[in-house]
Amino acid sequence: MSLRSDVWQLWAKTPGGRGREAGAEELGARMWLALPQHLRDASDVGERLVAEWLPRQLRERLARICGGDEQATHLVGFLCGVHDIGKAEWAFQSQLEKSPEYGWLWEQVRSLPCCPESPGLVPDPRPQHAEVSDLILRGYLERQFPAADRAAIRSLTVTAGCHHGRLGELGPSVGPHGGRSHVLWLWLERHGPAWAQLWEQMIDDIMERTGARAVLEKVLDAGGLGIADQMMLCGLVTMADWIASNQEFFPLNESGRHSSDLSRADDALTRLNLTRA
Image 1: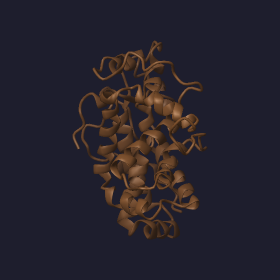
Image 2: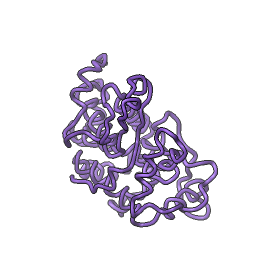
Image 3: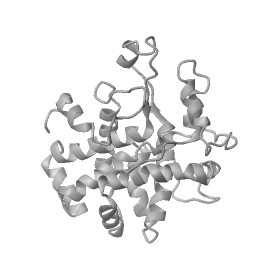
Image 4: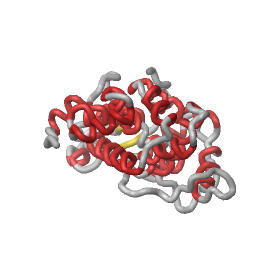
């Protein structure tokens, strides 16, 4: 899928660890990773983990849920690929505003026609991108699968919400009694419809890349995932994110993106050489 150029202005990663030690900034290079690229990288890693690393018993369990090995791979690839969609949010993107090294990343986001000057007062506590990812994905799946039970949808989106190792405090409902989820929904709505199209585009991109629509429909029609399967998938999403965040295997560059739409996961996982389960 060809993404609009404005989506590629959203940042996900700045140099860290060895990326800084390499002295790229001293050489005048502005190294970064665009958000759509990180989502694609994580999606591709997730698919490889299922196909080549996941223990046979767990792979068979996923296959039973999804209707086959191929569909299980599609589901994991999709969930891994949308885990950080919540980084496409004003509070996250603007956190570099005063950074002497990386303030230019916020400037390129702020220059987008769809970027609001400010959506208003940032919720307290400040939005965490994992919980925002959960909510954005909920809204997307509700629009794509309007007949699906909301609890079934949440059984999938929780994998984005807990990809940093713990569940957030989002309530199950949206409305005056929805608690944290209601507050964050109002915050997201204030970004406006043009900004919301950025979320839609990036999730559409992962949906097309993984071919996950059929398996998502199957899982939702079956009532969603049980707790044990949610925990397994949360672990896989977290692992894929860790690997795709490794800047030795998925390097940053001045454009923020890979030179093609092809996967970077094959080479990265070959070099990583994971111990087989």
